[in-house]
Length: 347
Image (cartoon, rainbow, N blue to C red; front, side, top):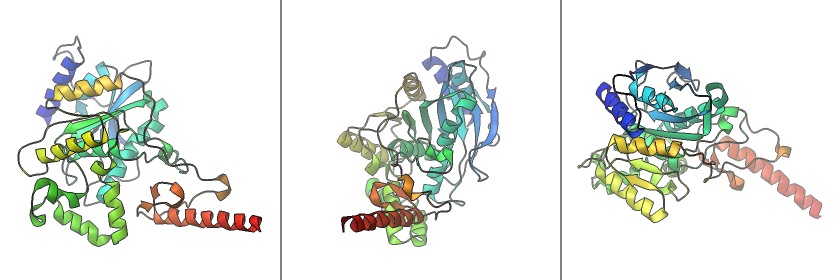
């Protein structure tokens, strides 16, 4: 990891055309360490902030480890972050829960929450909330792909103001990406029997804990291939490796085909220099957050949604996107009440 950090830091210096030499920019200590973006122990991040007058664009980094290992605890010195700061870009290194603590869709929610947290605190940290990109390695790359393709999870009705912030990116990328978190598709993609497919046991374990309906709803929510469309932000991923493992080029091939079908903006290219140049180029723009919509507002006459919700995930009635069954029941009750009132008025 130390070698990788040094290498990507050097390529970033070249890509940005910095006049600083390798010796002049040393690994920088994080300005903010182990900042809690949630209530769980692993919901923390380190933050490196440039000395700029104007709000700085932001890059989020999600570590690899297959969602079974990896952390940021001792990684408080970072050359890549120092190079970003020298170019006027803020850098966040994000830690998230692992599979022994949470289900995969909850881990993805951690990644989205970190992004929303930084957007909510944009003024505090002098960040430009409209210029946010992310990248990572392996699991972290796939987390970036998920954020790039999933509908905006911002909830305009949430009591927690952090949850009202957008989860959308202006660019995403990474190395050794998996094309979908719907592991049911992996045997076909990799050309493997189910029993030899990576993460098949994990998938069966999750399936056993869920109803069939919930399991299928989560498959859809976690399927980057199915969620991809032309409104997704530009993406840049590495080609992958030969073979049929979790870093297989077969994932990238199916990702490319899907991008061609949907018109999504996807670059497949090797080299850290190419990825960093891509991300920094996108961060130089000042786009509006467009594309997939935020959940529409509930009518004020309904009052506040349930303060405590179950942790399942399903399609909500009335075109309100996806959420918990608790929220679904509350929405349906209000929709039924509205319908009954209209009937009485009609009589």
